[in-house]
Length: 147
Image (tube, rainbow, N blue to C red):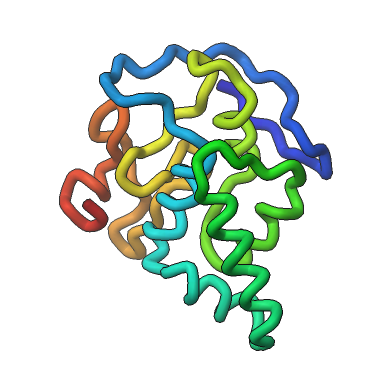
């Protein structure tokens, strides 16, 4: 699957077909992707809000945004909504929008344990980045770091 930068567009351009995982799991949703990335960073919704603003009123809006984006069936319409969260934890807007708008057979490969993908791998410090242990799990998750 090709991965192209968004450059301000609200919807990613079509990508090359990717063989769908042979899985018993339902397709990963954009909401689940956001939740996996936040949890993989070890952050609660409240901690995300605290990282992004010192003002209580702004923190309330950020908490509401995170909760909305993690609600099944709700999809961000603008990259800017996701860019806000990227200042708190790793998140790839292109992966998000591909999960939201592309057919399942064109979804990117995303770890079901932490939400990492080919474009936003787990960083394990001196141990390096993760690789794929199976079709749906990265090596970081297979050793129980996140599961």
